[in-house]
Length: 246
Image (cartoon, rainbow, N blue to C red; front, side, top):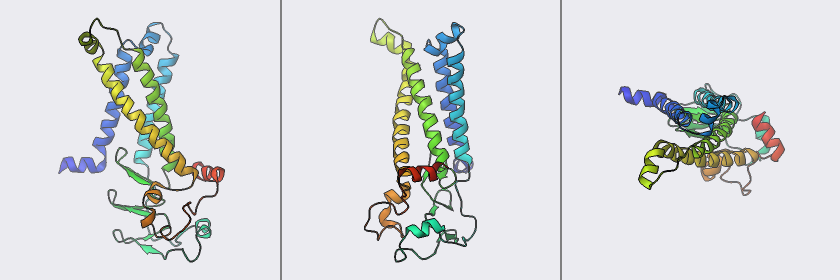
């Protein structure tokens, strides 16, 4: 039961993320990589910048992971903002809906998260690696985190490749580079996943649509009866990105 509570609180997930980040960082600094060679020459600018970038990615991770994503705390006095209501035809505007789980009136674009057991405003998705929902309040910071994380991962990949040492045979080469090869495998997988997520969320932000609305359009009350495939909240690329980030 204690282990279940630790998983529910997100402690193990966050601890695993932090541990993995610093173990890989340590591997890169201990092996004969570009960073290590810079240190030995007394050129500390690149090692310090890399360390600060990794630290920034960890700080953004915890900020997004621990931030209130926009939980609905009480009955909404208005189903949607005037701006959102004006984008939905009167015939398609759904009636105010009361959540069947937390019994609160849901604003438009809100959804109940079964994992967090709460309704979230402008719900996007529940991120298992963050152990938190991504919603109205932390979506933009989630995107910023992905960008910082991708920069750190790509730089780490470059550093790990620079540390691969030659060997007289495959066996000796694998023994000499086993830790760097393991780090490269982890960094490669994470880079691909983060790049994909960043591309998807940039696209969704550019059309003012959430992951939930995009994937489950046929189940969303204010979208399922619309003939137009475009999001009713789409105001054009520049306005959408301005609204999202500002």
